[in-house]
Length: 225
Image (cartoon, rainbow, N blue to C red; front, side):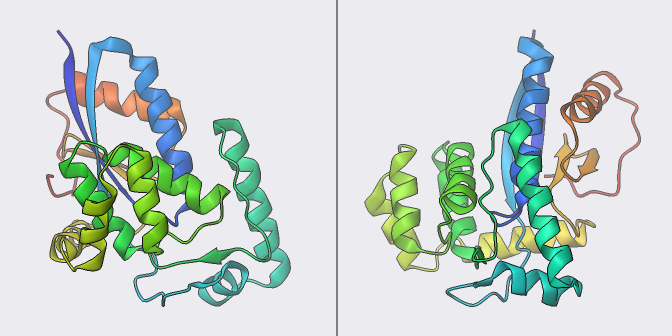
């Protein structure tokens, strides 16, 4: 009989380490085999909720946000590009890259979850943003991505043209912040155990085995899903 595992993956579409972390998590799940039946639910977290439409140059943004000089910023982007290679992510990050508002992408992800296509849309969003250098706030792009993962494009258009699911996204973001999440990715297992950052597959696998086998594990300071 398979053990059930509920995984909350708190992340942002514009977070490179979230993309890496998801690949590592999926690899960890594969290593556990058929004995674990896992459900991943993607929870919203905006790194830059006040980012205006059209976004901002990424190098400029990182310099302003962290106080880095240009050389350190470009070295950081080079490091991220290299980090994507082992997990098959082509991070095309450079001097002309931009960072965007992701609120509507989170609304669409919420809708996709109601139709059982949330993970597929999340992965498509990562590729569209980091490899194809698209704007995850562009409604036409979001509609195409929804259709590409088997969702109805016209229904997606209706979601994006309204403010539906805005309250749900904001409520979820508030819940996770109040629960202590202040960086992403944060991965919460069965509402009990939280890991932060793009952990290696072995670390994810070890934590999942602990949650499954140790019913007496102490509850972490994390709100249940």
